[in-house]
Length: 229
Image (cartoon, rainbow, N blue to C red; front, side, top):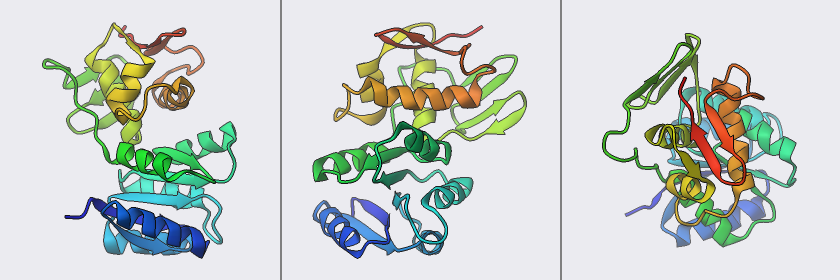
């Protein structure tokens, strides 16, 4: 059985070949595209389970392709970038990416990111809330929908899983390691800075004042807590 179908989007033939061989060795089916436009066509034709998307593409940029993919699908998107700059990572997450990998990357790291992106976090312990409703925020955990001040907001799958896990432990501080491993799996646990980027994205989308969070509160050096009014 296939471990899943992955769309590889990169304009460099050598990188596509390496990725194709690596992924095939792990049981994944692969589909390839060289441009953003071709990526959108291949996506509609093959409906992959995950997209590996280079940001530096000719024609339609990787960022724009990511936005277009995300507008109609929640399929996991991992962007590949040659620069390890915070601004570019945030830009990619803003466009709807679930994760990012910096070139050159190791095989083990990439495969761990793919497994983590394909993974869905557990809903939480028995009795976890089905919905979260306040005066300006509505989250339906069953339909995975979010509304802020009456307007629909799209969270990426991983952003939603973070929020759901925090909601399952509302009022309690969840440590960095626990949250990383609950959402991304056992390959993660030590990169609090990585988690910080995702939490900041959630705050931008749901908080009235992201710089002064009302809901997702930081416990310095420890973790995060979902605080309900």
